Image (cartoon, rainbow, N blue to C red; front, top):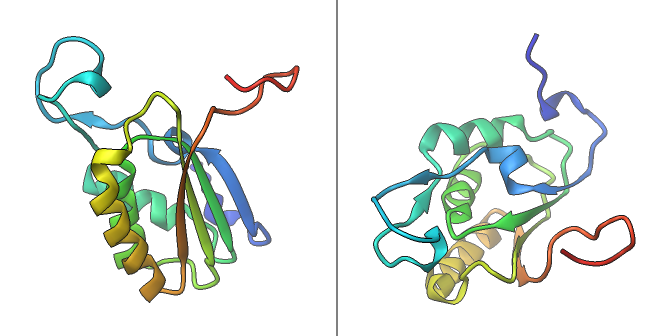
Length: 139
């Protein structure tokens, strides 16, 4: 039997790696070298991934933090702001790892921040290291 986060009827805060919720992004063009350093490639989430992730969110969710985001996360944000968003969702924080580019997508981010506000959601972005390790260091 498949289980979904939507079954957690009291879950108000969710903080997780974006790939846990959405899976891996798809490469849209061929490239050489690291993906985030190439001008010839971009990563995207397909429509099915975004819709499934939105449907998986608990109805009572108020705060969502997605870590290890890449610019592809804005595909999910598009689905989140245009679909059946959990009615109590107040904040979505996107955390980009220090090694991932974010500045080239500032225009897109600003647009989606405005779209989220139309649904009563405060969308924020930050750039920092990932989860702390067992000794409290960021990696």
